[in-house]
Image (cartoon, rainbow, N blue to C red; front, side):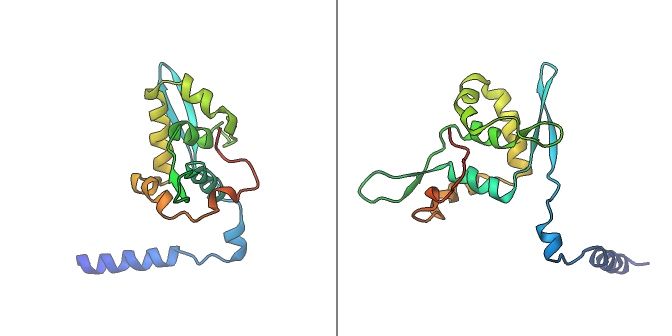
Length: 155
């Protein structure tokens, strides 16, 4: 078999494995990835992926209304790391360990080095890039930050 035939065969196999999802499949609770993070000194935590709703609420917690004459919204990265940690820290089964009200305490009490280990994993598995953070305000619309009827990741 020449290399082109092998590539074609691999492409065909990949197409056969892929499936079009139906409504029931799309609405089914997805298993979220959980990653064990070594914090050093024999300590570890678990970090998990966020659902779409959790990601939206996390992002909303990073936007605040601009109180100047132009109005609108601006980025507020205050306690960014602690907010993301609160949204993603979990037990081995994926159940949240912390509540939104824990953001300030976590931010003040955990070392930056340990918090950074958690955040690096959380950003990786949740596909949060530096560009995503920059685009939060650019893509926000008036009223977006106030639409949530339930608790956000804000402290």
